[in-house]
Image (cartoon, rainbow, N blue to C red):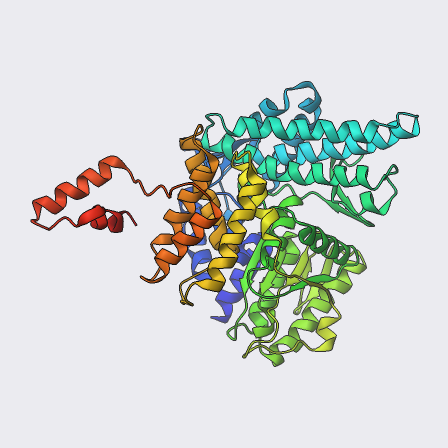
Length: 546
């Protein structure tokens, strides 16, 4: 066993992404270095890569495909020969190099192409980062114009951004392929935030790029000397990671998210960890994941429990350091105290090496590589049984950031907006009101959920209904989504109450209980076939549909 562990350790040091899979999985890869065998574990090793694309005859790997079906081709195909860790390291390197080249071309062609066509042509992650680079340039250019005497430059930019946003929303209402819809949808979410920032700059008369209002935003630059993308916020500067993200969607950015991002980037600037804390459902883990998507870095989420010992933690840290990935340790205060004290020593040694700018350092009795993009984040739920208070020497290694329940109205509004709804603001308010009333007035059941996660699934359904019936009244569509998604889970006495609440909020609109006509017909025929009695108002039909 000891010999086997040492052997696997050498393989993991050669290709650090092997740290993210178990010993058995690693042995199955090493046992047969066939590409199909590696495919099974590829999702665990790369952030959002579902398959490696390869040519059977030459055994050369030519590109990657994401779970959403988006794919890109490598500039230089990698031959899958010799030892697995060698060619996988080359795949890793080639992914970053190719994405860098693609990004460079995209940023170059942006001003010369129609924006929406450009977005659809480019990869999802490249489209986002490209438009953010140009947005940063446009804002700073507007500041320079103001200095030259064009007083209205920032205002003009604000108008231009609003027009761009309206174009995107118009576009999402047209018939789009699944991938393009996802691209436009995510672009709307990012663009809404970009427009709001510029509106605030106009409101507060900010006319200089050195003002804190602008410095505190996440700003993207193409650095000509480094031939790469740099991201700046406050005093920190970060390298873009070029980890392939596919089309994995983005969060709606609220003022709270902004503040959380600023705390986390400042922590990274000083080589510390970040620690968002707050009740469940406030987006602690999601915010860390979303920031990593902005910086195109791999993030691994670990659920901590009593089972984690210092050896397992050491192995995880070792992988993160060598790969330059982020680790997000959920519910960190569930780890037992004796383990926490060792963990604090491990984290301190990593942070010390980062501060000294070392590329190699001594960790757990062996010398390992250190990538300066590494970040360690912990999230905690305050005061539950079975959670320990963190020792002070560990607290000192993390920047705390308190998360509160997010502003649901903003999130609903922007998500409805990105699904193509015009009257998003009014509908979002009605939706939040309905949920807060339902929470207070309906009976308390274990399976009722009136939180952010439940809202998200309703918004997705509403978006689908909107695409299927673009001409129909939006209130009717949202009402149908709210009714269909909730009615199945109610206990008998809550159903009429919920219907009353719906009717109060959506005045003079009848609840659309209609389901698929052919489905209803099939249900009726089946009932007749088995000699069941048909109840009035198609009660059985509605129950089956639910």
